[in-house]
Length: 266
Image 1: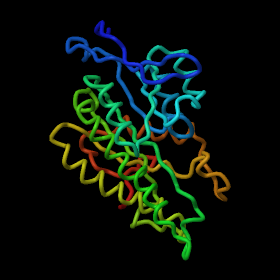
Image 2: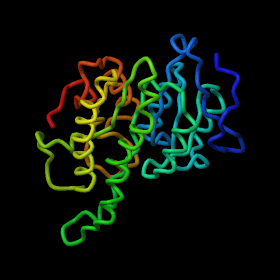
Image 3: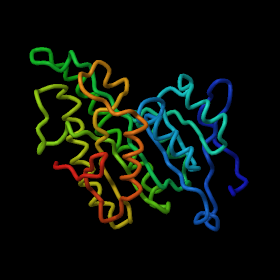
Image 4: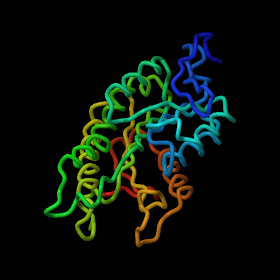
């Protein structure tokens, strides 16, 4: 049960007000259902995570840059009292601060840093490199996850599971054959994310937090439109990654996993 405090309104979707959950009392925290917060939850992998955790009976906080356009999230929220939608641009310090304030005191068992962009492919070729675009990619893919993790670290520490999961890519690995040169902004941003979270994992281990990086592989999402390769369905990729997340223990802190559970080289 929640304490009888006023709810904080964070999104107006399809003429319905969606509220974030209010904090538990200390007496009920241990018996409370688990909570997951997912960034970039309006489509693709993020939406897949939101759907599965909602079916599992978790309290889901799904974030998106534009809640008014997130019709599938609105439908989930309308049919599930434990599903809320919040506005969040991970590249916006103000958005992150507002969300953190709204969630103060609310334990978050699992934080999934999923929001990401590949950047304009045309601006990532020799002679046409757009460094301003590169900065945007870094702001979302590298700085954004750290900003969110830092802001919500007290919430994660206050939870039972204490897990932070970052969606990365095998394209970021120096130890694997990444094939021909392509999308360097995206790949570099994810390599930086890997190193950042490897170090962050070591720095929060004394608080009982487990930080993971997970490669979903090529998945049938908008980001992979036009790809000439076999693509995993969102349902399959998300299901496999959740198995990895479920099995992860503090001994796995700072590891880079493939969706099948194999540990990948940096």
